[in-house]
Length: 562
Image (cartoon, rainbow, N blue to C red; front, side, top):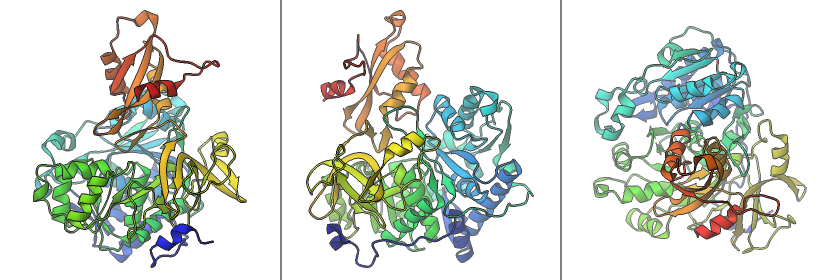
């Protein structure tokens, strides 16, 4: 059935596609056979060919098998962007196991959940993060602990003396160049990266395909701890291939990879789509505007998927005029709306139309994207390849006409299989609509007469700080572990740069009043949770507003904040 947006569909593309009936590992293996000497990754001047990337991933897969990893086992992967993350990600898949990607900003208190919930027995990390994982392990019961921790140093992947024009920012030198001692692991074994690769263990047969579990990224929500989203090889494969096709990608693409690969967008729309295409990935461990400018200029980057705040930051650099962005042919992203003025400047100065998209962890990144030739600004775009979406009344589930606000619902091969160990949450996340199973996004929006979707509000409580999703319930659950806190309610506060930031309204226990300051609580939060989640503002209150049933009325506090 034709929908209004089909008249804006790229004419060269079908409305849906048939993804390969192979595993995600096969994408790397095929690219390595087709383009063995082609640059797959570039990291501070160090080039990894496709052949080398595949061979290293196979060596690590053999090590994983040797320490007991079997089909369907979950392996935690906790790293900033670096070649080792890519090698480890594909090694886990080649070992027939499941990648559990973890935000490297998480601290020990948060990491316990990512070991315990997926029943992970093996984790792979970098030496700067390894002590946090060891601390998390120590705090778990012996039966729940990791048996093996594989630890890399950043300098396992590049030669600091050969970095040349890609020289790292001075502020990063200690972080990236220091070789940290390996921690002890209670009841388990710690293996260095080189020792893990220098093995003669046999490689197990590849046993996984489209219907097998591939990745288990975690997403938070309105209540409780984060939930694992079960994505099969098939759902990730679909959006990897669709992202590549939608962007007209070829093996000649040179892509700046700065969006974190632990995040679903970085994992699917960048890592997997570019490996499928056999493009070259220029890897940044984290954001730095002047390094980005230098890398785009030096490596003639053609494609850059980002968070809009990155573009704003780069264009605000005093060195911006020194950078050559003329190689860019595609720029886009999501996580936050691109300001109209910045989008206009990109168009006028570089002839680039910023392409915004929308998706969730549950939809393997894009469920919507703007057509590159017909984008609308501050817009989610149109339903992606093979995807159907509607706007319905969240109460009656009746489809609403253009312009009316309702909940966005989604179906397609990119939608996840359900929440790990959470059948009730899975059942609540889906509805039957027009005889088909649709996922409830929890986001409120409307569709215009052309079939383009716009986000207007959220059913779920969520704070969007520079593209990072912060779920108040998760922050509150962590805060309640502080002995001074009797009650806490987390809301958003306006922030001139991040858009929104995190604020906590706290009621202290009587025993701690006058002994703990707002700054003390904020500092404790920074030490015990990822920095983007930690409240930037803490405000003490005598009591929190509550409903007749005793529930905290967070909306009252949010409305008072403005």
